[in-house]
Image (cartoon, rainbow, N blue to C red):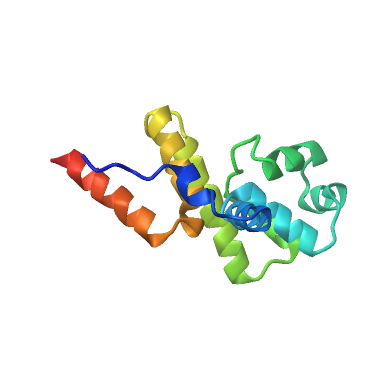
Length: 144
């Protein structure tokens, strides 16, 4: 059995600034985090974006803070239009919404596996390649 490196092992040598950067980068790979970044970069308040997208500001807050599942395509498109996203930004936001909805669907996969997949989805951009290789090898060994 391959021993996986503990997450805190590779975080020990990181400065607080590096941790903050990693957290903000990881947030960009969640629907809520990406939505928040787009809103902030355009200087919009939650109330202004919610009004333009025809949703409540409370619902928008819950989306940005990942307290609700990402919305279905119609709402994502309304948000993208209200934010003035280009085609690539719209596509990424929609992909994040679809992926997160699938990962949190109660009938799709067991809850623990959904949590693992969502954690990997969020952490993947910041994981060192060696850690990814170790995870892949451990999963391959488990298949045997």
